[in-house]
Image (cartoon, rainbow, N blue to C red):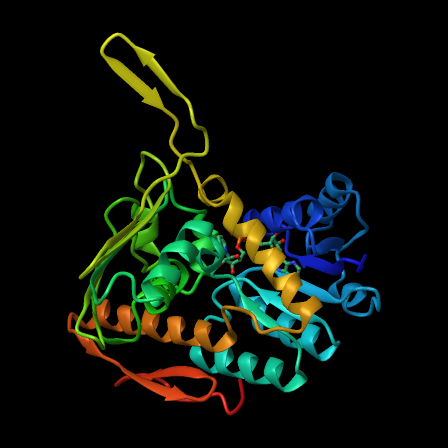
Length: 355
Ligand SMILES: NC(=O)c1ccc[n+]([C@@H]2O[C@H](COP(=O)([O-])OP(=O)(O)OC[C@H]3O[C@@H](n4cnc5c(N)ncnc54)[C@H](O)[C@@H]3O)[C@@H](O)[C@H]2O)c1
């Protein structure tokens, strides 16, 4: 039997704790080698919970020859530096989205990691969710005919801490980026972005110059249209659902519940609603780690690359520009051998020379 890929987890907050649990218990091809967090208390607690060594010093992880790969789930501003240091230490890298807070840092990271030749997968977990994968395969196989309309909703029950939001890159780069990646993956490249935003649910979010509610309208290269609705504070629960309407069929990925029972009373029924992304995506998060480990083990390319993450970042930046300027932003997808990069007026235009 081949040994499991030994993955170190760096950053043990909301997302890192989920990845650590999956690496420790739900992956066939990976195992959790060590956990690290700048907060030694969190690192020690996770070390005890998952029965693995822990450290507050990332250098220890990078210097450990038995560690083959790292998963980076620290705040976004730290991703680029950690990803590049890990890659230069010969570790394959899984990095949470987005790669960085600005385009130059995103491009530098994509280039620097690519130059080392290690695998680089970015955390767009819907690309590994069995429902999205099944629907997208059928769309790509032509079973839907021409897609006409893309609709997706991503709504948090309640906002993350304001301290998180202040370092997140802003609403579109932190949240809508998932939907923009899904749009490209399911339907194709985009040529126009129009967005509307409001700080209506939480005055603290408005006070840091961010928004909590948004609509984004996309025009795809094919002529199809898309609409994304996002909320940081939907109140009733966490929702992520997608529809693609096409000539021959419509794909609908609805709201599977974490629990599958209803409580029936005279004339009524109640059922539980997912409260957060951990409850909504148990399979997707486990499968993205498993897929990452398989890429390392089998020397294959990840399904979602650094260049995909750059394209989604660019569309998020276009959405941000549209919201701030109140105008539609035309974008130009430029095809290269290794993927697509976007150009639009007002964008900082470094291009990765390798990816
Ligand atoms: N894919 C998804 O569905 C999803 C969901 C939530 C968050 N995220 C992404 O995950 C990342 C982390 O978000 P979060 O909500 O888990 O944040 P968080 O604040 O809950 O956790 C971050 C952790 O990183 C630690 N840390 C900070 N700097 C560090 C460093 N230099 N070295 C080691 N540890 C460090 C902190 O102590 C903290 O424990 C963000 O980039 C976010 O965009 C992705």
